[in-house]
Amino acid sequence: MSSTPEPHGFFLDRYGLTDGELDHVLGEALARRGDHADLYFEFTTSESLQLEESLIKKATRNVSQGVGVRVVSRDRTGYAYSDEVTLDRLRLAAATARTIAADSVTHAPVAVAGPMSAHDLYRLPKSPIEADLSAKTALLDAIDIEARRYDPRIRVRDRIPQPV
Image 1: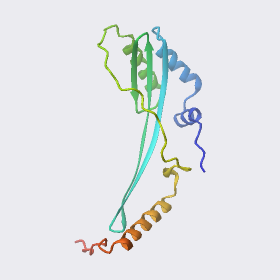
Image 2: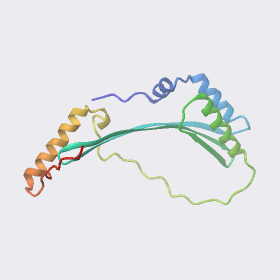
Image 3: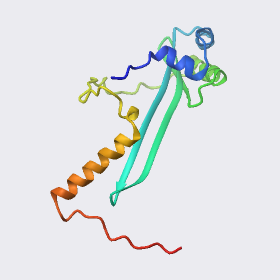
């Protein structure tokens, strides 16, 4: 079973940031009498393999990353996000969120749904993204073979030579 990295150290190491720099960004976010500020880091990966005619036709891996800064000042909340995680972008997001939270214009309240309960229906001992690519392709091959064994109507189309 793989171990999940400790989030605080993961993001500091990944983006070359220090605790002191993050403290400074939070200080900038609170500069105009903000009551609370926090940082939200995101890093997710996804992977897809496409099997067609018993051949792997497509393999993709996507990374989504970013950081959000939230500032609460009395009953106002400001939020800014950047998908570029650098100290300069953190400072810009902090300043933007601070400005939004300091906005003195009143806005009508908006109803939002209550929080959804979180539950993990399919806990896995290891993230699928960590599995070896050869193991993934072997699984797709086994599924393909079993599908063809189950129903003879499932078959590979005759391959037509492509013009050169």
